Image (tube, rainbow, N blue to C red; front, side, top):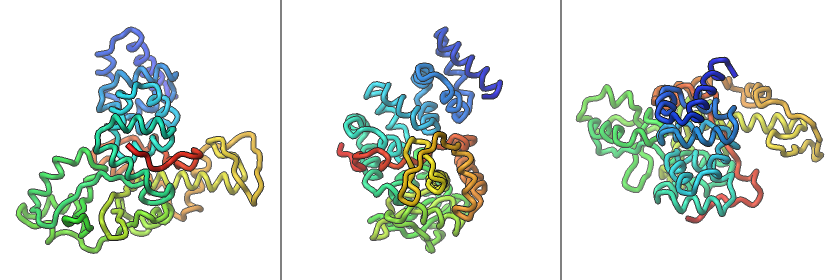
Length: 346
């Protein structure tokens, strides 16, 4: 921890213990969410939980996805059902699904029962897909447009729902049955005449991913086409969600980590023994994830730093988590928790 971080942590703890809550909120409001997430990761559990409870709702929602997995679960399990459900309601659907698929089914059912119907529907939709499929890592929060809209109407819609969407850099044109017709980039909307129809300016040559496509194949498609986001469709070409470049970075990091431990016959950092040639190798210490992540280039034959920089550029363009790449969430796999159902009934 740097000196600045240590001083900041001591200040926040001091303000909590002296009950200067208004000042604490004012100080926290000026700090980047990624920096607060880093501080909370280094705090004692009790202090971290108390700080989270004192943060404004919107700030807490920005910070939560950036916390370590175990810290997220500790906070959710420590909050009341009502408080936890509010946190989940304020998360992007894919972040909420990532969190809930790691928790016991009875807890998930209880939490979802107290969330909004929209959140419940979106999370259940994501939990239905096989754990290594594109459908399981997509988000259902995107900007959908109609071909009959004018540029002015499209921009008004983006303003209305943009903050609740994963990205507004690319919008997706669909018909009344949600079939994917094309895409239109925000920059084109800004330079086209106000009365131009979306159907006339959209790109009809759309490359999409099927919900059943394997995650690694999806990652290779991103690398091949140099996209920052791709639409995910079902077997009837109906748009069901999108995958963004930051999701792909998470997938690549997890796959490279698992492959690195598997090839070396080491224990996974989560405590799982890894098979090598059918035999279990007992290793006393696991190397850090950072060391394994250096295998990205060999495993995927791409420059993972370029992927990371591209992901950050997308976030900066949307004004969301501009410096959060170092604390991005790690994609979780439900299969790591034996017996956990991917579909949770409300």
